[in-house]
Image 1 (tube, rainbow, N blue to C red):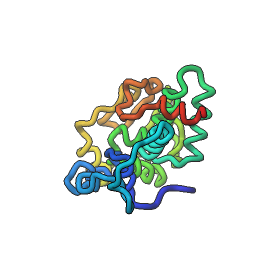
Image 2: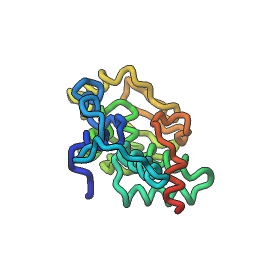
Image 3: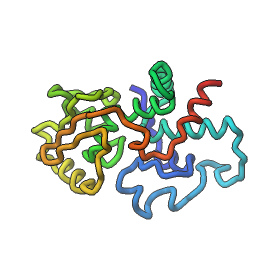
Image 4: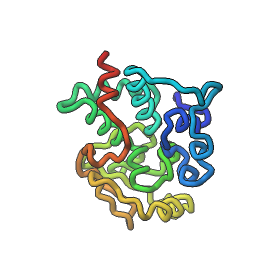
Length: 208
């Protein structure tokens, strides 16, 4: 299974934007972007004027890195979005939001999407009562995502739930906090996705 294994703080510096890939650390002065607010590498501090293609590419890379998806899978999601009714860019974001690891993160069970991916892989969650350990599993309206009964007493989940107690689940998830259960009530609307992504630039890039 392919995945990015290098230092993730370099990704935030490359995009010159916090992608919140390391959970708590991103909110402290230990954040690499706070310390070195320039692109990594020998020429990171040099000035460069982005072309139209460069701007579109950076937007695609940013979206991929937010959700922890590599190129082949991301391209597959775009093709899936393009075939759906509606705007391809919004469809793409809806598909990315419906990944199980993202849902786990949105519900506050994990401090980052990378941690959510690991927790799903370890089999801590069920969908409609069945264990699902595939982070890329796409949930649909009507499905119920739950933290396994045997996992609710683990200190890791108690700490994460407490730390994320002020985080509101998006409107498309009906979250029962007390029972660690959520029902998918709708597809994710664009206004419910709080990430600074200009999806139209991604559509333009793939349409060349």
